[in-house]
Each structure stands twice: as C-alpha cells, then as structure tokens.
Amino acid sequence: MVRKQHSPPSGLVRGDYSVSVAQLASFLRDAARHHARRAVECPHDADEFVLLDAAISVGTAVELIAKALIATVHPALLVKPSPRDTVHGILRLTEGRGLAGRGPYDFKTLDAAVAVELAKTLDVGPGMSVANALNVRNAAAHFGVAIQADFSVAVGEMTAYVDASLTKLNVSRNEFWQLATDAAQQALLLRRTRDRERVEALVDAARARYEAGIGNLPDDEAREKVIEQLVEGSHPGTDDSTEVECPGCGTDLQVGIEFEWDVGRDRGGWDAIPLGPALHDLDCPVCGLVLSQSEMEHAGLPVADMLGYVDENY
Image (tube, rainbow, N blue to C red):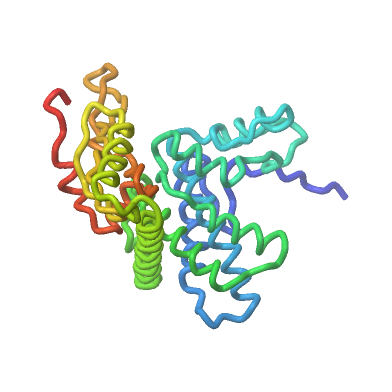
C-alpha cells in the first residue's frame, strides 16, 4: 500500500479555515481579536485557570496586532533573521512556499517586544508601552502565574494598544470587539482612571520635594533667585515653545513644541508630509516633575491650547 503524499499548504491555516499569504494581516488581526476578547471578557472572580488563559491572551493579542501592523508594510519583515530561517520564512510569507524538506511553519518570527518596537519604527504601530501586557503573558505561559491586579492593568494596556491600531488595520472598534465592545470600553475607562491617579501621585511627590527643599527656604528673595537660575538653565532646545505653570511647584516653564513630519509619495515623487505639532516632556528643574504630553493632559494642563501656537515658518 502506497501512502498518499500530501503537499504542505501554500496558504495560512487555522482549523478548517485557510487564506492566502496575501491576507496575512487580516489573518493575524482576527487571531488577535479572539485573544483580545477573551482577555477583556474575563470576569474579576474568574477561576484560576480561566484567569491563566486570559493572562496568556492579553499579551498574545498585543503580539498578533503588532505583527498584523507589520504585515501591512511587508510580510517578510516578520521573519526573525537567522542563517537557518530567513530564506525559508520569507518564501513562506511572500510566495506561500518554502525550502524543500522544511515544514511550512518551520521558522521563527519576531519576538513580541521586537514586533511592537518595529511596528512603531515603521510608523504603523502606536508609540505606547505594552510591557505589562507582555510580562503578564510571559509569567502565565512560562511559569503558570496569573495575578488578578497585574492582569487588570495589562488588560487596559492591551485594549489601548489595540484601539490605537484599528485604523491602520481598516477595521472599526465595533467590528473588532463585537459583543465585547462594552467590556473593552470599560477597560479603557479604568486605564484612564489609573493613569490619572498615577499622574496625581507624581505631582504630589514633586510638590512634597519642592516644599521640603527650595520652597522651604526662609528668604523669599533667595528662593526666587534660585528658581530663576534653575529655569534659565533649562531651555527646551526647540525653535518653538509654550509657557505653562508646573503643577508641582507653580513655576512658569517653557515646554518645547516640535512639528512632526513624515515622508511619503506625492504626485509621483517623494515629499514631506506634515503630521502636526507635538509637545516635548515637561521637565521642571525646580521640583523634578517630568510629564509626557499624555500625562500633562491627565494633570489638567491645557494641552490643546499649548499646541495652538506653531511658528509661521512651519
């Protein structure tokens, strides 16, 4: 009896479902949706192993979304460079075939953290941290550990990352989350609340440092002189800046404004494409408070007004 030889699949297979490699981005996006929904729908009083599954999913969703974003640029970018895997992986993800004698998925793709960073570098992925989501996934997958408090933070992080990626993947929020839309919205709201509380703690700590140090100087004139010297030595180093009062100590500071550009095709050639102004970090030399643009918003600073002025030369 002669066994029938089955040729390896030329496309991407998930159970009875298969697509061509040309549909890699949507294939990865749909897998990410499964994991993202499982994570956001995990109840707070979940059984330990239900929580363990959801903890694995929270980081897996991030990884698959990042790889889907990279695939929109070019699938070959997903292959982890190595003497053994590079050629085989590139052939599999671009032409649907590989090297003779190798299994169809016998190659390595980018590690999750590398994929997230590459998606950001390629300007298709969000520039936000997902370290908590990936750490929670790794702890669950490699050590069987799942802590509810850490998982809850990771869910908010993952949901924000996914939400910021949907436009690039040509899918609406409702289409992606489907029946889990309300749960995803709740995760985002809880994340914003945590971020606001974290920023409030940073401001309180900066205020305490100021009051225990420079603000505690008995001589008003000496105190103002020290503050003036500190502020003069901390110019933002950008062509444009805007004045804002530090929420930690009340000092008037200059926060740099930088106009961001991208490069793209325009009328058959390459041209600079304006993306809009962005704020540098608020970095107070008096109380030591450092806030990013998003953290300034959580601190109640008028970020929209701060960005309202952009030099006419732009």
